[in-house]
Length: 322
Ligand code: ATP
Image (tube, rainbow, N blue to C red):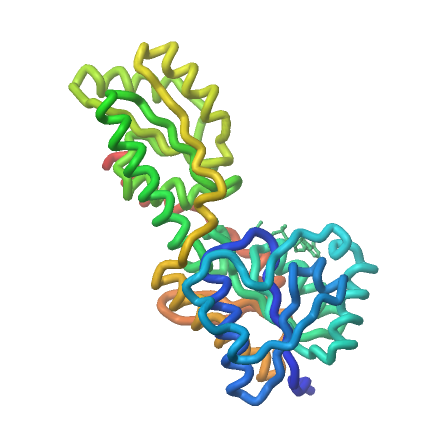
């Protein structure tokens, strides 16, 4: 028997990502248009445990689609990783008459959504992460904006390093996933792209490459380093010592998370937010929304968490030859 949904909650969890506000806006407005009540839960699962629950109306999401971050706030909650925490969270949902909940976050947040589903609250998750590292979807909320922000910053560093004939190492976000590094590597014309998925930690190859390029008359050498490789500053020192070429490291850091979302992030996040509400209305639970082969789809969370994704070998190969 499917459960009738009258009130849905929405929360953002894990790292913030540009486009989360577009998703929240779409959840609120679609739900209201379908005759449901909506409650916003502040600061992720921790806010749920603290009963930080507010009513949301159409006007509460006015003028937010263009804003980075998340108006609901986000957090990481270790308490919610415990079974007692999860039961308490489900009780707070019931107390607030929340029968379905939209969780916007990365795969850690999916596990939180799965726990709420287990304790009787219907759940659906949206892929909110700048890292693009979720296997059940070709699109994640925030990736497009983050990659464009990083690309523009790298263009600027490249201008100055070419003028000074320097070698530049630029570290972009991606602890376990190299998608931002791969895309920037291609989009910025990097000489070397270091990805956690493929890097063999053989610095000598890079050093030889720099020396060979300089002999051919290249005025700059750009290395894009994914955060998961790390050590950008010490790598710069070693490369400078080995090549005699001035080498600087720039760590882009949190600036890649912020800023106004691109049209792609506003559009897809809006569609996913609406789609999530429509799946909940059907009475489904423990689901996650994805975008695959040009369509919005949904999967069981357990199935989604078991899927594997890796950087495509062909794309990596091409990134090196360009
Ligand atoms: P990002 O990709 O930005 O890191 P994420 O959603 O993967 O986002 P996490 O910190 O892994 O970020 O998870 C966010 C929150 O989800 C955690 O702080 C915790 O409250 C909840 N969570 C994570 N793992 C679990 C789990 N196994 N069971 C229940 N809740 C979990």
